[in-house]
Amino acid sequence: MERSCRNCNQMLYHGHDYCPKCGSKWITKRLTINTITREFFDRYLGTDNVLISTFKALILQPEIVIDNYIKGQRKRFVNPINWYLISLTLIGLQMFILKNFFPELLNLVDISETNKLELFNYFYDYLGALTSLFLPLYAFTGWLVFFDIRKYNFVEHLILFVYAFGLLNMVTVIFTPLMIVLDISYGATSIPISLISVIQIGWYYKRIFKLSLGQTVLKAILSSIIFSTLQIIFIIITAVFVLGGIYLINPEYLKAFKTN
Image (cartoon, rainbow, N blue to C red; front, side, top):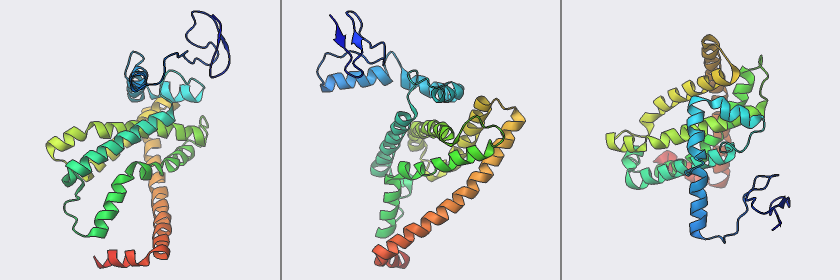
């Protein structure tokens, strides 16, 4: 029996369960909780193992994921947007658990002033979104650092860092049970996580741009210097706009925060 693909209208012949044009699967079952759950697990944790495959490849051979995606290979691994959204979901779950069950690890139990507590709660609630604001800065840094090797444009550098920090977010979440068992505060993990991120980016640069060890170290150091400078400028500008906006909308809030 002939059928038409529901996504691209390509003709599907009897016995063909996948569209030869767009690769979509022919689905006859109605949507239920069971089918949605099964589809998710088949896609990300099942026989295809695309989530775990992406995770492993980004650690050992990041160029296979990033370079091939940029060159047009889109089916083998999780795409960068989905990858990063999954990592943000996990970060949100991590913050929910820490805030509600282990607030001492976020140093929230030591804050008595209401305004400061609200500010810290807001920060942790939107931690993933706030850190995402720095992705364009990382991409711009990479674009500047590789001025002599124009392999990637700005957007392609952005794809690199979306994959990289999606992985870093997931690694941070994986270590949550260790933080809880060893009673390590979230703030104390910032230094080792920062060190891991520098090593990770250096590893990515080496693999993707075929650098020697000396070139990798030089590019990593240069990246750190440029990004730190851009980050300071960005934070100052953002703080001025945010505080200015708060002052215009609700000046009493700043006065109360200062008093406390």
